[in-house]
Amino acid sequence: MPEVLLLPGDGIGPEIVPEAVKVLEAVGKRYHISFSFRTGLIGGAAIDACGVPLPEETLRLCEECDAILLGAIGGPKWDHLPPKLRPEAGALLPLRKHLGLYANIRPTVLYPALIDASPLKRELVEGLDLVVVRELTGGIYFGEKKREKLDGEERALDTAVYTTGEIRRIGRLAFEIARKRRKKVTSVDKANVLESSRLWREVITELGKDYPDVELEHMYVDNAAMQLVRYPCQFDVILTENMFGDILTDEASVLGGSIGMLPSASLGGRVALYEPAHGSAPDIAGQQKANPLATILSAALMLRYSFGHEEAAQAVERAVVNVLDQGYRTPDIMTEGGKAVTTSEMGSLVAAEVSKC
Image (cartoon, rainbow, N blue to C red; front, side, top):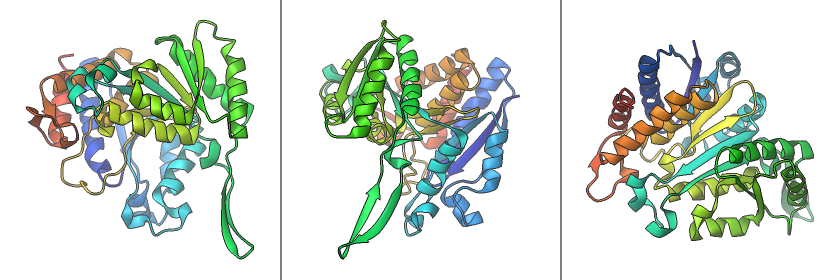
């Protein structure tokens, strides 16, 4: 029996996670899969209950389960806390490190029904289907950080560190994914300025020789950011380091109509973590305005990567497409003529479609 740990977190997290559970339960009925769900505390909710953003009990539950579904963490309520106690730095980054989740996969797909929700012209985004493979446990987010006094001023340092092994393992995953897609990898760096990027480019160039069937190109991150809005359909698999991937995936998400449509999978250890790419959106929390589709699509990635249920994963993805084709919309993807629905209604619609797909 697959055991899934639910970490709803903060803001809209407690609203969107139950909708993914609805869909997983519908999958279970159709494909005779008996899911078991447990719930844990993380982020601001954990701070309020336990005084820390990542309790030991939550870590224990993570290690015992088969997959983790995370909602969202953080909010202005906890921004006054020291960095290590804030939800993001004190929970999400340590959790990724603890579980060995070095690879983040974020697919960006523009569904035909949402083409008018994209800010780019139809001819630029029609058919958009790309994947960003982001290194998740190295780089500037995990390097040494400190502040010091120097000549009467305060100086802050954040160190970007990568090893050949870290680069090679994330690169290999990107090439393997590309082999199953359109066989092209765009490795994004800043090798004209950063030493860590020069090492990145050298390692990826050498690794590319093991994949002669996959086209490899290198692109500076500033150019990649421009090309994502100039002609995004040129990309198949984008491979990049931690901070660049964080920024570029948020940019790419808008191309698909809304960041509320962007799922993600964090892989590498025995237990994988799945979460929508958006934040906790405290401004709409509790109002049933949040889009649960990124969380539902993250559950589809869970079915694919953690449980090996490809047929079920595709059924969820088709269900999302069908609901969108019928015109149902949460506020973030609303266009003229759309049928407005709440967070809960959208989840129920997708769950109902799963039984038909």
